[in-house]
Length: 223
Image (cartoon, rainbow, N blue to C red; front, side, top):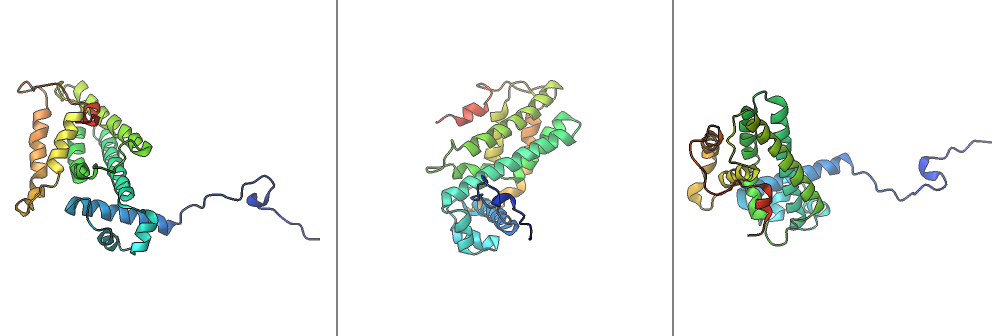
């Protein structure tokens, strides 16, 4: 008589209703959609037609809507993705640069290439700023940038009267797309102006800044 071998899901007490793991091609499609959306949100703003995003990603409309049922869901994942990539840039700079201010400089230019300023127009009505995933990613980002700045401050290279919020405000302003066709070549000057900003961060300070350092908490407060 043949012996019947039970699989894990056939054994008594095993829950058969496991959530299936996404297929590799489905994950690739999702990543392509998020990447295309990020590019097009930077180029044209968060109201760009979703059909155009699907076309840029090389997928059908049905595939896009299967992963992201509405615009807010897609925007959420783009914001989280940009924050995660920016955090990774901060950690890589910390790990790979021996000089603390060189690490900060490398991070600032890398964060500019992520175009984190383009996130600002996306954080409008309907965007859940208190989503647990977003809050967790924000905490990782704050910790990573704060660590970079603390290291540069401890070795005497970073002025004492600046905080994480000051850095993020500058990055946001210098990487946010400007309205109007007259500013289409704006991108070529971003890294030039970031270098001017970084020169202003170095110690010893050449002037006294008005007000108090901007923290991450200051940026979270409602205006």
